[in-house]
Image (cartoon, rainbow, N blue to C red):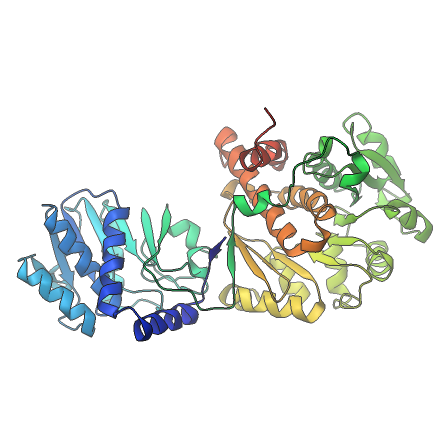
Length: 499
């Protein structure tokens, strides 16, 4: 795991480091060196600098480029510098690196590389005036673009922007911020790297969840074991109108590929009859129905979840009164890990999350932003501009694990918070969430004592499987079924097969 700090936490960490043991001038030198070593330089180079500390990182980078004999030029907003930045600017002047003002710059099309050092992670609001013009010139340059710390114009806490630099490489300095992952970040950064410059992180412990972390959720299997040791899960949902949802959730568990010992697919009786040819390893449990929709019967649901460690409910179940009855009963009676998705979330929102905080078992919710709007009562704008604190607040209040889907997935129980940064635009299609529910049920079944990590691990596997599917099919043509089929490949990357 890697640390993720809010902008305020990063500023505090930086200040503590400077006051305790590392001069700011030295940190600036390390940052510039990190940028210099990370990029694939194509001279001539334009280093576009604002007036803050971010500009100082650019001055050091320019100095190192000049030392390597690369043609470079500094494009300066104005002769206004931070104290440490002024020292490094004077070093550049001593090396006779050319300096030009922004106002004298009409185009950047002649450069092979442009370094974006206009704003740092502390930027918020909207770029205006000459800064906005320079951002547009960078984006129109056709050059290889390197952003120092974060893309200028992008909010370091939210990943939102009105107008921002599009980079080929973003070199984060010190620790990641949420804005490197959330919302628009993936559309603005082709690649990103974090450079350690010796600033100990001081924050609440938010982490980037990675493949090595997901691997810990799958301990080696013993020869002296059987299917019951790995848990029975129930996947409950489906309707005549949304028959694919429960089938996709089951497909993610075909052969129990996400780790469960036994998968029980519970669906309307008529849908079960249609699924018989395609459900091989999983067992089928017919539910009462009317016109192809689930009818809640307490005795039937009690039998459906009997002996299970985890149950996922809601995929394609339909937005009906019967779905609401099922959610109420599951919250009040089910002792295992309950995963609510899709129509299960809609039913919960309709009841204003009643019974959630008093649920008998542990609960994981898997909303996309629209569903989270309905659950939380917050507007989409508020969620986009404050996603992590709102997710944490909701999870604490309702004593649940929240998995908030998006370009980066936020997973939190209100105390521990993880971000996962795997996935592809091709997953923005029907059924992707159903596949995630199937994976999550299996991973949760064997990690009841680590549910927040289990949810993050399932999101990582789902996202990585989507990337593998996109490599095979392309973002345009891939389907959720392709993601489900790639689940074994994603797991094999982190847990190599036995020789």
